[in-house]
Length: 193
Image (cartoon, rainbow, N blue to C red; front, top):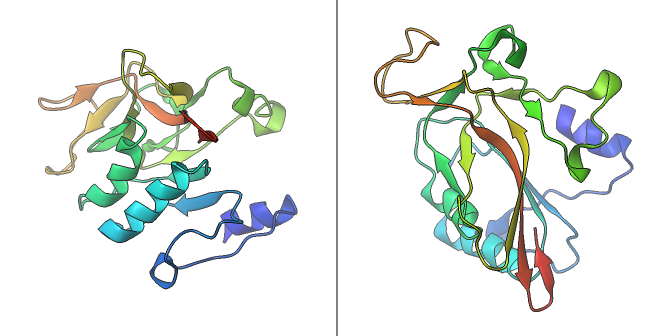
């Protein structure tokens, strides 16, 4: 509800759709928001989102950690060369979280998309975050802009075990991690974002 209220305050018209009821994402959609799904997409629904992106669409995807693998949802990311590292990030730099290490206050990277995050709006909370990885080497036709990152004191806790400490344990991956990225794919008819 808070997310929808924020959209309404910006005077943005939105419509909630079920991909099950559509053969494709409507052509007049200027942007699709997929907000923290708790269950995986069907293969068919993931294909619809991928087709929309490859036709110059814009999608905002938010995620928070869930135990179950979301292979079809993650396939949308992989279409743009990105992957999720399974697990939940615990920040061990006290300036990088609010109240508990799983409630991240990531570093805001210097980018056009983050330029308005100043003053009283200089924090972005990212609870139960996962790490998004982008290719280390450049990929033809792709541009990646990291927007939100953790400190190098953050660790990725795997979901298979009970978390007993926020500190690094055997099997944990050390940061820093990217928790927000903009990916753009050059297409014949513009770009998918």
